Length: 127
Image (cartoon, rainbow, N blue to C red; front, side):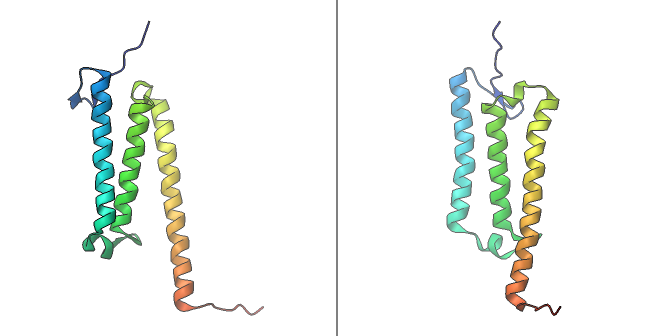
């Protein structure tokens, strides 16, 4: 017996009549998110470039968040995670989110250290 795929996106807020319509809806959503990313990358609004949050420009945070949203949504819709059990979904989704957060944390601290070394100069160790 074939398993029917759900034709709703955004937790049922938007429902489609066929798989083709759903694919077009998902394509439009991903295109809008990508267009926002590209527009922000081209214009680089002064407010987002000057202000920082946890040592990184707000524009970079927006890029990271939008990229994670796209990756999550692609996995949710095209890899059919929506139709899996919640424990498998959590294992697949939360593991990369934790690892990416950890990577961002490490990169920010290492970049801050390297910045301070170049800014203040080397301190020579005397043994």
